[in-house]
Length: 304
Image 1: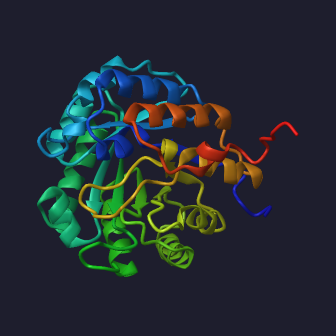
Image 2: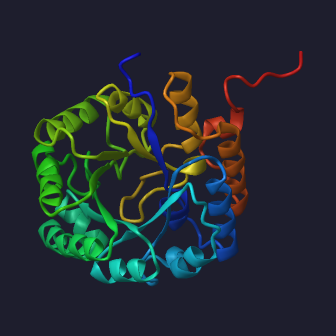
């Protein structure tokens, strides 16, 4: 497997994508979790989202969380924004990395932000302009990239076209989100291949859910195509409030455990991430799906 990337970049999304799908967690617990994650060696954390409190009450304290965390100099923190108002709030709070999201599926986009995909793309062009004017970067996340719970499969050509609009609007990077966990390795290879054939050098991130158990297999398929930037969520936290049945993201500690054993560096301390997953489990008060959290790394032994 010498053709795999020597190193990958991992963005920890549990504090945002994970906690937004749980019962509201106290602000102090969110701050505690982000601070613990910041000490694991992970270099990027999606900390909050600036959304309407009535839409996503779990993120109502985004400003407070952002200002109370201990920001590690080695970590880049980002926020998800749904529209221009959310982008302005994030930038006013001092964030220098934001993510704007649009669904490749028109139906899911209307459920999510009450507008068409085309309307969101017009809005995102303005978000990118605003971010750049204020010295910030903006990644565009194309969600439902491998399927929609309302429409079913989304044509690859449409997904690539939506991403292409983001590239043309000046996005700093693109992320494909498997919002519903409908991706399989072959479908990952096709979408990544089609995008790369048009935008060979454009920064690409992949965001997989493990709804149907193919999350890590999808990572392997992407690694074999040279993708070296992935999202993951501590303990396997996550889901989507507008995608019924969409369970958690791939667990960060499971991603680390797999790729490090394959000779792919992450720069993250696996034991520290497992401890953070245990902390996340305690905070939300239920068992998380991560199997590495349950069993530990493959090198763990028991006394005979």
